[in-house]
Length: 369
Image 1 (cartoon, helix red, strand yellow):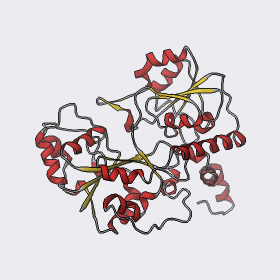
Image 2 (cartoon, helix red, strand yellow; image 1 turned 30 degrees about the vertical axis):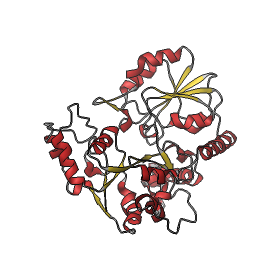
Image 3 (cartoon, one colour; image 1 turned 90 degrees about the vertical axis):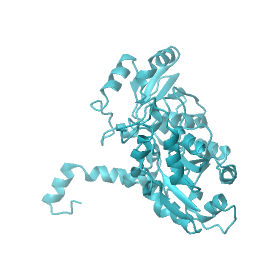
Image 4 (cartoon, helix red, strand yellow; image 1 turned 135 degrees about the horizontal axis):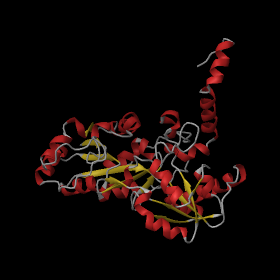
């Protein structure tokens, strides 16, 4: 049996293979050890030809959602390239999953899980194969464990972090990065401006507070309005204050009663902090299985693909194994404000970038690296 891996080829060029930076050397090595072939779908599939068979020309390389119906010729072409292989997808959108269902292809799809407070980065898994889904469920992290971790971090943050200055009865409006795939709707990227009516209603009941996404901050931790002039106008018009406090500090605040976002995963996490929460659009996914590190091990894939048990061999210490693969802590997101080692590394990196420090060290003949 062959495993074909791909990003969402409907939404962007699958030659980008987003987040497969660690999968090829870690996850796929475990799958290959079981005797399976693992190859990229792009090795014999042409996205341009797929769209051309549906009379769609000049498709955008990223975030393209065709309004034209995908033709049976395109589906036949995809089916001929997939055959009886299993698709391993990363961040497959509903449209791509529907396509695989229509051509009778089995898939395993994963996203980064919205709950980011476990000892390492967890992934949300799903499958259209009942047997694989049943195996996945046996590895799922229970809801009670997420509640346990959220309560621990709530207590730790309250005892160790500076308390944000928040007005009573506040509502936290969570920002998202401009390239967030979950914001795509009918060939456009949703923004808060699309929900002016809903925001106006919320203002009648709450004091609104905006928390920007970490990717929207500059290297000094400030929100760059030069990049987001429309956001500045929106916040000013609706008299929404901005908080640069870590998002988990805000979730731990009793003054914040409700958390709202277009589709941010923070809305999912807020429920575990005892907050009322709501999406302006929709969550990234409705029914997924939270898997923590098991996807790295051969016994996990043996259970999914061969329905066979095998000896379990795991890391002795699991903390941050996947988070630390991201360059400069790129897979930590809000958790980087909670992790003591990451905080120390970030502090040292910022200190080394100080131009005065470099001049000083150069004058005295010290190593400036």
